[in-house]
Length: 199
Image (cartoon, rainbow, N blue to C red; front, top):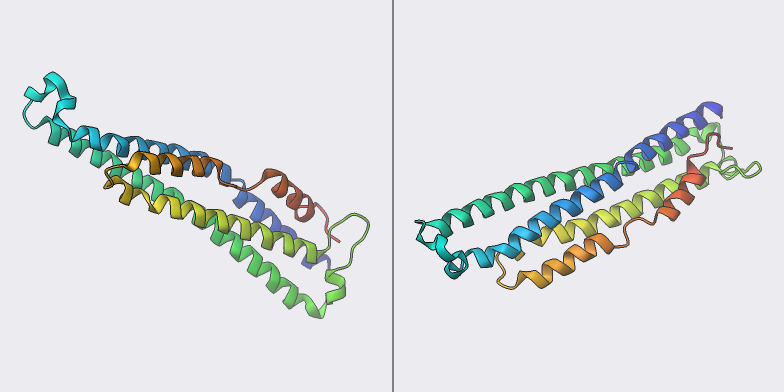
């Protein structure tokens, strides 16, 4: 029993380590998305020669500026895609932790019955509570990742849209204001599954 508990604790610590990176990635994504939005909003103005004033006398100025902005946008989109891969990596790791935790329960049935999985001593969590907590953490992180992915996927299409500003503003606000992952809920789940000792 004690060896199985230690294995579960390793799984829980692994999940906690993965989740600790999420907020840093969220801040990075908002900054990258904001930079991409700024460039997309400038693209229409850049293509109008009257916006250049006296710089119009510089040969091919419009084409050069436009090319530079598109190049910058492509670079930012690549960094956004890399950030999304890191989000995806966290979700995949959490999925693996949940799978491994469920597998531990099955493998341990010779030593641990279903009743033992639900056994509670005092205020300490049961292993069944811990497995459910991990499943819930994986589910809310996966849902948020998919929401972020749908917003990020809209960027290239908006770059080609003449009136992208309103759509970009709405998407950026959604990225900042989206449900994200309620910290009080995560802290509550942490309290359940990341206990130093598990019954």
